[in-house]
Every structure is written in C-alpha cells, then in structure tokens.
Length: 77
Image 1 (tube, rainbow, N blue to C red):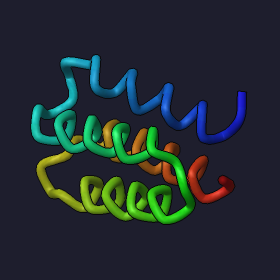
Image 2 (cartoon, rainbow, N blue to C red; image 1 turned 180 degrees about the vertical axis):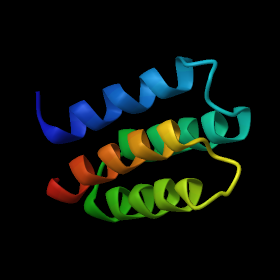
Image 3 (cartoon, rainbow, N blue to C red; image 1 turned 180 degrees about the horizontal axis):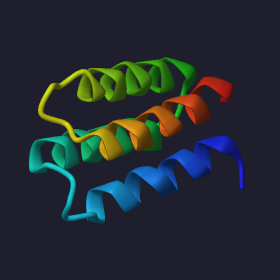
Image 4 (cartoon, one colour; image 1 turned 45 degrees about the horizontal axis):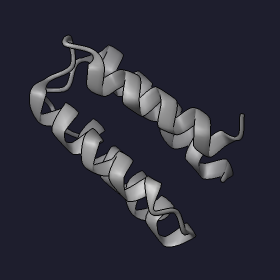
C-alpha cells in the first residue's frame, strides 16, 4: 500500500474512533474527502488542515500523535 493509502486508512480509523473529539472527527472526514480528489495541492491542504487540528489545545495527546503520523506519511507523497 502506498503512503497516501496508508494515510487514508489511518484517517478513516480515526473517524470511527469514539475517543476522538467530535469536532476533530468532522474535520478529519473533510480531509479524507479532500484527499480522495487527489492532486498535490489537495495533499498540501490536507496536511495544513491536520496540523491545524493538532494545534487545538483541546485535542488529547494520543490524537495529536496520530495526526502527526499521518502528516509524516503525507509529506512523502
């Protein structure tokens, strides 16, 4: 599986995880939609969106760590 596919899979797992804050899951779902349309510009936008989510002070540390893992995968794409 390529890095984009792995990132998408991780993001989908995050949206199904009830321990994630609802606002983060909603934004992650939007990011998934953005990535499904492909294109390097959309990957860049998705990375920016995920970083913005991770900057939220209300996001738990484990969520932030998973978001950084996805951003790392997307940087390679």
